[in-house]
Amino acid sequence: MPARFEGHTLRRFDGELNRLHEEILRMADLVTEEIQLALSTFQQPDQEILARVNEKESQVDRLEKIIDNAITEVLATEGPLAGDLRAVMAFSKMVTDLERLGDEAARIAQLSARICNQEIGLTGTYMLRDIGIMGDHACALLGEAFEILHTLDLERAKVLLASNDLGKEFCTSFRVLTSYVLEDTRNMRYIVNSVMILKSLERIGDHARNLAEYVVYMVSGNDVRHGDNDA
Image 1 (cartoon, rainbow, N blue to C red):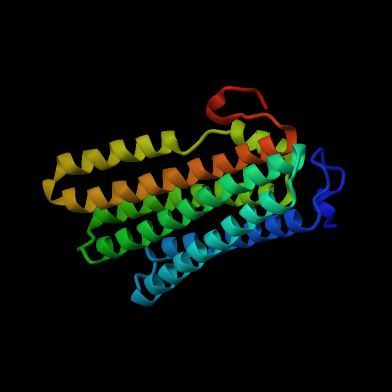
Image 2 (cartoon, rainbow, N blue to C red):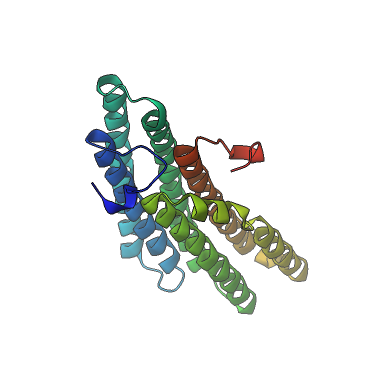
């Protein structure tokens, strides 16, 4: 039995439930690689990198189906109860968020390709800087969420949920981008793509928070989605 489950408030995983958790972690690793590749396209625009992002996205989609089938089998054959049932339900929701994270990574890579095909002046450099900063923050938040998913650490999940999300940062960047349009309407096309990338990064932060919420539910039984309950 993996050490990360020892001393946990959640009943010990065994058999299929343990393997299901490992598959979730494998999917998280794939998503991490896909997002990192997508963000790297801003520093090194390359069709080969875009192709690798698309391949990672296909792998994530295939793994989603495998895990969904495994969840159905566990429910049908193992008849999980109490904490184990909560774990299965939480895993099912995690799979959806992980797949959507992969979608956001693919979207970022496609938008990056559009931006890199346009002429980048000083304004474009500033915009790429904002995207880079927000991308770093989104990746840090997601990395912490994946660590929480790996360890099933209730306290770390609570800390993540209590921290500020990327929404304020998105609003700040959006205001800055709007000022660039006012300076020169020729920036409009470039800025639209940039805003869409920033929005994808904000969604990555939202999915990270969702994953932490599922861990809280799995471990404690408290449903803290939408701020309706205390963790």
